[in-house]
Amino acid sequence: MQANTASKIEIAPDPGLWARLSARLRSRRLDRALAGGASPEAAAPLALRARRLTALSRRRVIADGLRRVIRDTCRGAPPSTVLTSPRVAQVVAASDDLSRLAETLATPGPVAARGVAQAWILLTDGTGPLYNASSTSNLRARAAGAAGYLRLED
Image (tube, rainbow, N blue to C red; front, side, top):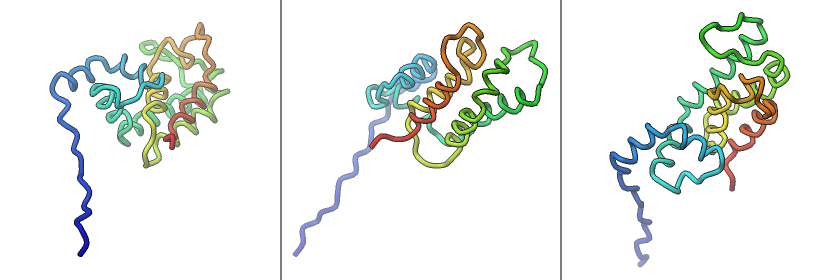
């Protein structure tokens, strides 16, 4: 007679109200921590933020934003008087890397939170290389780096 070898399924405890509030209110700080390589398992707010960022719907929003930047910049859309405008020459030079990043983000399947956080920051940080002429960061390198960090490590 065989012994019952059914494995136990562990269910994570509810992170609680404080962790959920912290994940929402400190999202920018958590994004930067994840982008820098912090483990999502290190704290409940990090895990919640990582789960939100890596959801396919959120990744597609980021991908659409990157595609819109490329399309509008390469098409010669007039700069916005309300929003910070992308740096045309840098976007044109990095368009292949940005397109690859967008494609990878929009593809279903598991991804690492680090790469998604880097892509989100790249798209939304007005002080970064996408928008700021004073940024010393290379847009192509940042886009390629984010795409590389999307792959889950074994």
